[in-house]
Image (tube, rainbow, N blue to C red):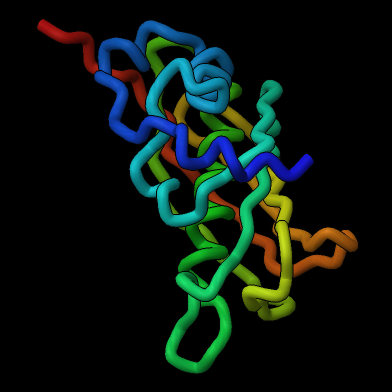
Amino acid sequence: MDDRTTASKVEYGVTPTQVMASMPGLDFVRAIFEGKLPAPPIMQNVEPFDSTAEKGHVVFHSVPGFRHYNPIGSVHGGYAAILLDSAMGLAVHTALPAGSGYTTLEFKISFIKGMTEDTGPVRTEGKTLSVGRRAATAEARITDIKGRLLAHATTTCLVFEIPKAT
């Protein structure tokens, strides 16, 4: 379902740390996807829609457009990087208990097929590979409406306890 009309109704902002820390990761990610918490400001650039989250797995859609172009007339790799890094990080977050957070230590992207404004909606799917007390790994894929692979990535994230407010 292509429901981009709701993208303009999305509230963007940063959730206070104590609110995030009080929720299991899956509940936190779902609250963002459902509009109960603000979406991260970076997502204004890609306007995701039809977002779903399960433990260790997230999916969302986006539409690359002219505003994402680089100087050589195609969608900039940063567009894919935002989608892939977000999908992998959110997949990790869905697997974390309340009071835990994560940050990306590294990620690797492979660009398979270029995107243009004619590509149409793309699907980004992130899945955890391993989630431990100190580190997590995940992978993500971007596919077009025909299921063709456009880009994929892997990441390693540092998992940590969110400091309690004093």
